[in-house]
Amino acid sequence: MNNTATTTPVATVITPEELLKHWQGHRGLTRRVIEAFPEEALFKHSIGGMRPFAEMVMELLAIAEPGLDEIATGTKREYDHSMKDTTKAALLERWDATTASLNELFPKLKKGQFHDRIKSFGLFEGTVIGNLFYFIDNEIHHRGQGYVYLRSLGIEPPPFWEH
Figure 1: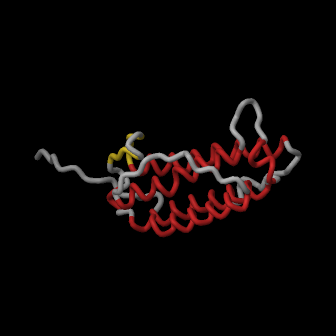
Figure 2: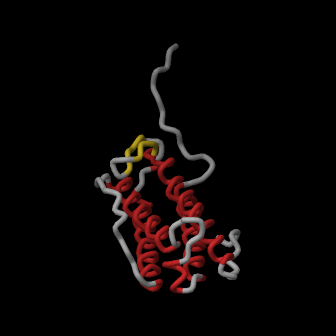
Figure 3: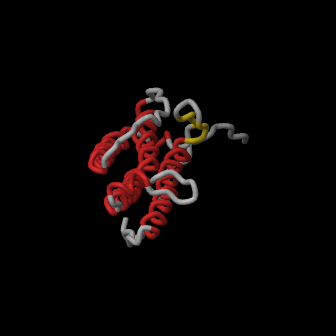
C-alpha cells in the first residue's frame, strides 16, 4: 500500500511553552547584560570595528517582536532597523515591553505551524521553528559580543548559565 499522505512533525522534545520559557530565560540574561553596561559605554564602546552593544540590542528588538508578530498573526512586517534609543533606561523600557509582547504573541502560534515554510520580513526564507531559533541564536551571539565588551571595560558579566 502506498501511503502518500504527509504529516506535520509534532514537537516531541520540547513544547512550545518550554521554548518560550527558554527564550525568555535568554532575554532575562541579555537584560542583565544591558544593565551591567555603564551608560556611555553601552552606546559608544566598540572593539575591532564592531557596533556598540546598544546597536546590537536595537537589532534584537527590531527582530523579536515584529518577527514573532508576523509569524503569529500573519501580518506582513518589514525589518525596521531605524529605532535609535539614546538612553539605557529607554532601551530597557523597550526591552521589557518586547518581553511582554512575546508572552502575548507566542501562545497564538499553532502547534502544527512550527514546520510551515515562511519568509520573515519578506526576506528570510525558512520554517517557523528555524526563524524562532534564529531569533534566539542571534540574541545569544550578540550577547556574547556584549560579554567581550564588558570584560574589556573591566566589568564581570552575569554568569551565562543563569538564564
